[in-house]
Image (cartoon, rainbow, N blue to C red; front, side, top):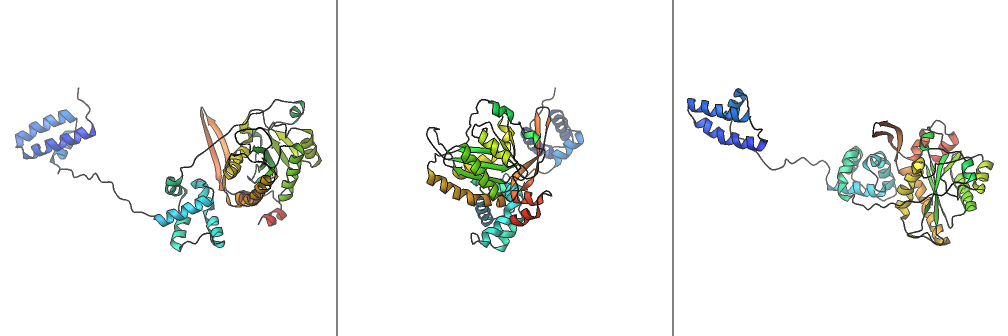
Length: 356
């Protein structure tokens, strides 16, 4: 039985036999060819061509590709990426033109025409490749436990992640982010976060303490900031949300109140994503206490709401199908919450004028 030769062994064998084959007589060539065919398994005509060919000159040096984007383009891309809060290439590609214009208009960036053209023509994959060397950032995560059911909680309708079915703007998921550090003892600042399901529009307000009346006042403040109507609130099973005060507030203002299932964090995937990508990235995980700290945090949120809603593109899930154990997810192209709001047909003209 003939052995299977590796590519390296076959190449070395060809180089050793070829020189002897070319120097041999007619009868000698026939004997060498018979042995070579039997050993390698080559077709006889192919073996003749291989042994008659000239010695192969191979270069072990890697082929140098022509560099399209120089170091100046890479540095400019890094600055824009940092300004965009280190988002991925697909999201950055959708917003790079607007960021360049805004940063140049306010004097934060001055680019030569060739560098600007390179950035605008660059693909998302190339952006990821050029930024690979500066992406080494630490990631952190935390988990929070739920609570038991009550009669009031059971009276509120349950809404899962799959029940939204592309609602109109105004249906928000609401959650709180705790700034307690490593201990939940004592009093500390909380951030109340609301995210619109249809557009991804995100609002945040810092609260000195976790209290139900303060939550309703914060919701009222968010409603005054928004250019579209709050139609519904979807909350988790926290007692700060599931109480008579918030239920009465929603009933008086004709706001639909729903809740997620207990211990099912994916039911509120929209707000959970914003908690990490927006609040934790800006504020971190340290402990924050006091009225002055909450006031400073609210100043930060007042500026950040413009940045997040007008300049931060995000993905939105289009469909999710399961094939056996494999889950296939498809997404809409990245867009900012403002762009998604203006693209809706169910948005009033007054809202469009105010946003623009």
